[in-house]
Length: 152
Image (cartoon, rainbow, N blue to C red):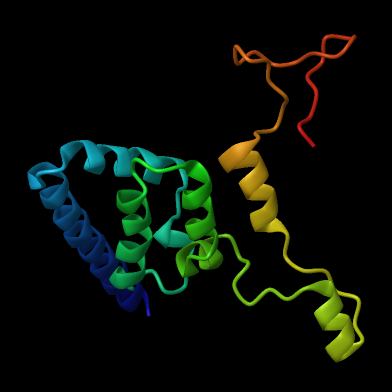
């Protein structure tokens, strides 16, 4: 089975290289260079990693996800977050795919199990608010002892 793993890793590496080559060609030759650069910058903020996903070789899902950024390159961040939140790629990456609410689980199965809240935390910590409150100049808001204040 050791040979099988090596073949799979090599196959994945080739697959990702081909996808990167296709993206580079579009990014360098497209007539809308500013849009392409904005989309790239936004994709660096709302990152998904194919390594952590079960269906990482589904190129169409990744292209659809990246299209969110090209479509909204000059739009507002709220629209981007909305579309990213409904993306199957983000659902898979941040583990909220197939998550169910606590009330639904209780109603159907009479079990007290809580829904996956990972994505909600990620939206607040990584994509919007951050971990600490900030002043308008970007410096942390400090309490009376000089410590930072959590955003939530």
